[in-house]
Image (cartoon, rainbow, N blue to C red; front, side):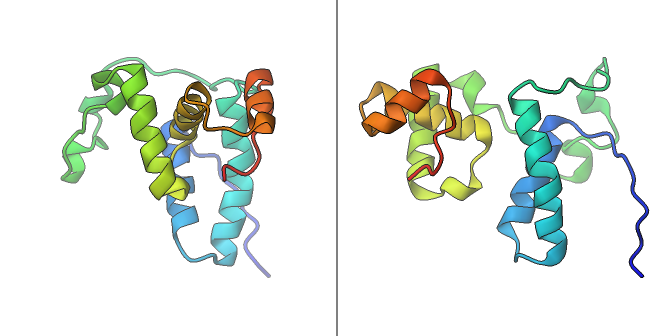
Length: 139
């Protein structure tokens, strides 16, 4: 009999998104499919503000023992913070053309903003974008 114990980790939206990206980029095992099936709807609710965070921490996250630097990495500046919105949208659009499956939801939204502003959407996609309806398949 499989272990049916369940646990509740405390994760940020960014951590959940990262786990999903890793799971989607790995071979589709039963575990990955189960993980994607559990986290994708929850992450969509977070993105659509259908759920609120259980709590918010204060203080310097970089000083955490789990910071990027403590794990041997280096912090990268947020592209959105260092570029204008229009530049960020174009960068995301170009990434979407090459590797759409590796993009975050925020990146896909930015790519769609660029597509909308540059008349790169079908009339159906434009209508969905204007009404906030899901765009369905990106391509």
